[in-house]
Image (cartoon, rainbow, N blue to C red; front, side):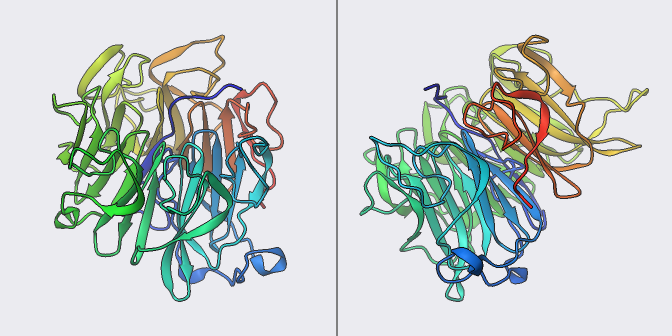
Length: 436
């Protein structure tokens, strides 16, 4: 079976009410898909059957490598796509000998004790912050091959959400390829899983992975982080107007000519950064002027500045212009994946237009592969309008519209476009049915 070696996109929007993420691996819009848990209904103790409670409307999205999740206004959660390790959380039996089959129809995540307030999707695992017994708790499911669930006793993985012990008041969760990080209400960051590139923020030189959530070496609470995102081998916190990142630096995505992996959080120095999206080897941010800057690996044009570069310095993308004019549109959100990125832009006459740029393996930038294999500058995803959030998977992307409908496009190899997606995939966005 075809499988990508990388992961998704994550994104956080500072000051966003209800969700921040989106953009997944990610956001999608992704990394933290948040809703106000106070409005959630009673989901029941076992999360099954009628105790799931009212559904509500989709508020945010999270995209992993080849699976996606939708978080509802009631705190309900549904996921679809790849399920070989149980990352959909539907309780279906999975094993190495008998991996779970992809699910085109969005599946209820079962076994959660209360409403979800934050969700993140990784390569083959998913985690969520859940209200449990009057406090926030972290639940994870899917692959635990690299200890990314933070549950030492769990071998292989699980298709049923499991509570992670030892974390006090998690606020937001971010999933990388094979690791997970949590931001707590006190501003501390704890991570578990793979640490080969120092993505756990541990700099002792000996910890290659951690089966439990451990605090980062740096005291990140000193920066007063407001959000956290993760990608394949990097993690970042958002602070007041800036971002600090650690982990892989093979393409100088930490913005400095450092070693291959750094546990110390380095400032990206994007002027008044209001949003950040990170891929495997490059990063993008929306600055205070509503422009997008990208840096790092750009061999597929994913830096969006009409160039191809193995390593590109931080620079503005070529912003789409007002229709019939010369003034640039304003960027309001973005989602970043391994080889491409997408953004939501607002013009003087309309808001919610989607543009994508970079590599085009399966139509993920919104045009057929026969038209172009890469776009060095943003191109319009013509069929979309009034979009509020984005989520970017490895070779597919999803969008949430103002009327709470979800549309996905790109590869459909693992049914990530939903029940109505053509088997060969689609460069034209397809509405995901089964979410209402």
